[in-house]
Image 1 (cartoon, one colour):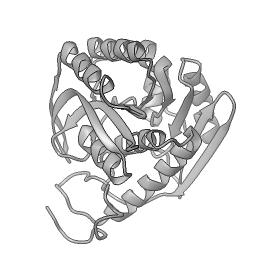
Image 2 (image 1 turned 60 degrees about the horizontal axis):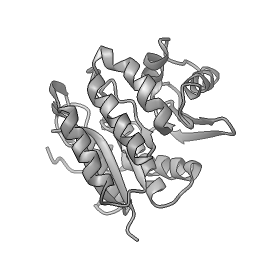
Image 3 (image 1 turned 180 degrees about the vertical axis):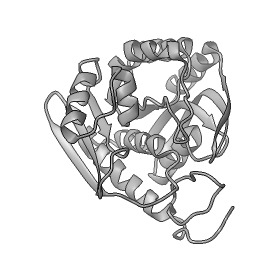
Image 4 (image 1 turned 120 degrees about the vertical axis):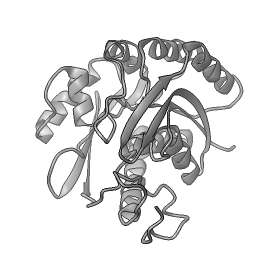
Length: 272
């Protein structure tokens, strides 16, 4: 049986994040990737210059087409930029009896905001209760909770528990925005706490890291891993992708990670 995963997200014309990063991640991890496009962005390594959200009806039709045909073992939700699209996705997932890895993509690596202000409450109300795991970075967690980003592991845990109360089965608090020699993530659930610490990779190529990690978790779930194992394997994959792509020179801004580090030679040449 070939494992299948689905990404519901926006397109990144620069190829480093969004649908493009998700499909690369699925393929790199031996999972057949399917996709539902929610928005088209004009984007490169320097930032986002335009966003066009797709009509809810075509988003719903894509979800039904994929889930009505493929045996999908893992679903990842990324960029959902409008309230109608969010409510449509939630309605169709409930109709199919499915939950998902929810990556609350609200702010791009470049700092550009990717979600309408009126969509934030819909995200809380509709998608968080459908999450097998919610994967916010610290600014995203703070935006969801209406507070300041966590400045310590204790604060990360507290915010993770507050987010857990909004309905997801687990919350992965990603600590990459904090300083220090290690990047520490906390997987918080009602029954356990998993601390993952990895040496911080010095790189300018970190565009799409959140998309990549969430997609890798969905790929692990599609292959039958339990959540803790899927998160651990996904974090190991991202660590290697960051390290292998650190020397890349793609574009003039924040470049992508090396999704196919296990297949291609290590980056070291200028390919701009």
